[in-house]
Each structure stands twice: as structure tokens, then as C-alpha cells.
Amino acid sequence: MKILISLLVIFTLIIGCSGIGIYLIESPHKDAQITNLIDAFWWVSATVTTVGYGDVVPITETGRILGIGLMFVGISIISIFISALGARLIGSRLKKRETIESDTKSLIIKKILEIERLEKHEVNLLINMVKDLHDELHDKDKST
Image 1: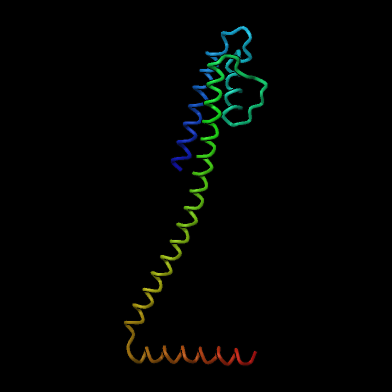
Image 2: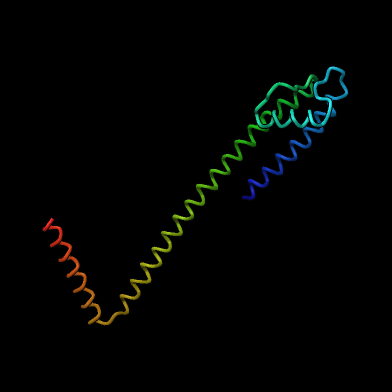
């Protein structure tokens, strides 16, 4: 969960800094399409999420270089997010399986210890019960 929160914080910082940065880079130019912070954040969000509508684009070389960097950052963050989420889901399933196996082993050990504490007549009774159960199941299989 830490990595997912960390990614969210990093993602937010990248969008915030890049939005302000592209605004400062592009807005002073007369032909700029990014003239206010809303346009800047729109462009940054579209670029980082790899949507890239193309309705607003940087016109300066520095702005375009920033755009290239944001494209790679966006792909990287999305890849890391998906990988972390998948690892978390698989990890929780493995942990659940390990818990079941551990509980089963503990129960078996407990039962073995209980059997070891039985007196001789109780062991004989248990053996006879198992034999009777075996015979009953064996007879049932023959009849079907």
C-alpha cells in the first residue's frame, strides 16, 4: 500500500510542477496555445496519462522536450502502478494460502499430540473404529 500512496504523491507532484513549468515556458510566447494554468494542467494531464488529445500543444523546444519527458514518466508511472497493484493482489492470495496451510499443519500436530497421550485401551478403541469405518466404506464400494 505504501508504494501505491508514494506513486500517487509522486504523480501529483509531477503534474503540479510540470503544469506550472509548462505555463511559465509557453505563456510568454505570442503564438502559445498554453496561455493559462488550466490549459497547462490540461496538457500535462493528457500527456502524462498518454491520452495526448493534441488540442493543446507546446510550441517551444523546451516545452516539447518537457512533453517528451512527461510521456516517458507517464508510461513509467502507469507501469509501476499496475505492477505494484498486481504484486499486492498476488501477495495477498499467497499469504492467505500460507495461512491455511499453517493452520492445517498446526491442527494436525495438535491432533497427533492428543493421540500420543491416549491410554492403551483408548488407542485400541480408536483402531477398531477406523477398521470398522474402513470395512463399511469397502462394503459400500462393493455394493455400487
